[in-house]
Figure: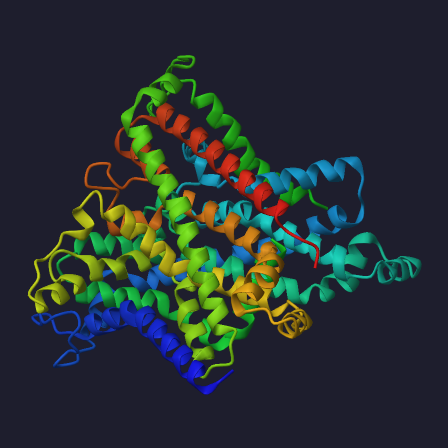
Length: 273
Length: 279
């Protein structure tokens, strides 16, 4: 590539970067401005204050919301990995007629967002007494991302795990479940990492399930806490901006550390999806 | 071994979906113990309701509009960032970063930009001596802003999938084409695009489903307003159930939404799958 062309392309890339940074710039400068500072959103604050962060943390009860989001994300991801891998194994390996039907059911469900059935789902949750519990958010998330998990696992098992390994373990007298956990599961590491990354991002960011089923104050997740906080503070955006930064910070930090895995995970996950 | 997984999917997705079919034939208000079966009344109401066509139109705009922008931009970004230029790694990171941020919070961040009072856009317009605009309150404009924000947030996924696709195309094709004297555009049209079709298929289907079920960004930016102007089917259904105590009708809208997503995403899948070629 000649030099002139390279310079032009680099300039274009720089413009794209700048454009994509605008919302982040506005978010950060807004959060650092003092209460009475009504200067333009484009202007850097004259006096930088961190008071908005501590005020917002307390007013929006973010500590409690962090714990709720953590509990829900952690247990949903563990259950997805555990039951998803266990389900994918026979569906990938034993192609009986029944198994083929079951696989088709999982795949068909993947296209339809669970919340198209909002009304009956809400009714169901009220009926079984799970409103405002961590469990309901966990089970809903597990159900919502289970088809994708099974799809990715079974594709990976079919295309990359040699059958001979499992047969050898069987000859040594291992049970099917024993073979799965001792031989197959460790080999699924790359796809497990992808699923973990994808599901954690989606579940951490979930708003729809949470706003329907977790409305009690002590049950609010980060997104729900933030939406209530925004509603009360539309004329104090400095405070909202600080709360938003604190809510996205863990994911951004995680992303910057695990960038390579994040990008690979989403790329391979979606290419096979 | 798949029984636990199947149980949770049946209980929380398939059963509610079938129950929703039943509720769509009732006049249930969402709270009472009693309700009547009303036959196809909710369905005829759905067809006659001007709001239905408004929100279906919006939903299609969000779904198809974001899909087009995300794919065109995502492909251009990927082509650019597949070249060996200096700013490559940092640009990729910045474009990708919004993908991991909650769509609700992304909506709030852009609210700071578009807000009528003290929004960044109006600050800039006034700086240049122009009139302030009520971008989020304008029913013709705010729909496109929702498409814009959704595109901004998820163009990174499209870009990454296209980059992965580009990197899997063998350099040999391009060398052979260059020997035959093919121009850059000819190479793109005859080599890159056909071999990139699997990535196109995935991006199309993913973005269509994502756009058609859009909820968070709308709530954050416009709340569906003014009136119903920027509601999607998701927000409309939520509104019908929780604010207007019209559960039977909300269930009917849910069925329509599920059918729409199923038909459009399957049509896209079949259409783009047919265009794929063997490498």
